[in-house]
Length: 64
Image (tube, rainbow, N blue to C red):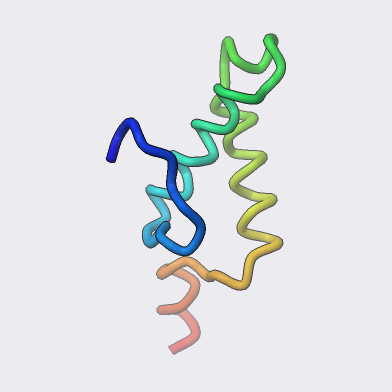
């Protein structure tokens, strides 16, 4: 699965979400951001999690 793109609905873990954000940052990010893609990937991750109904396991466990 390392060379495949994640399909919507099939991303199940936080690690997979972070890896997909890193892939997007390196594949579609501006040239300057490709030299150090981690900050841009983190920005994508924060945006995706803020705008998603999906909650991380850490958050879910705290509410119980």
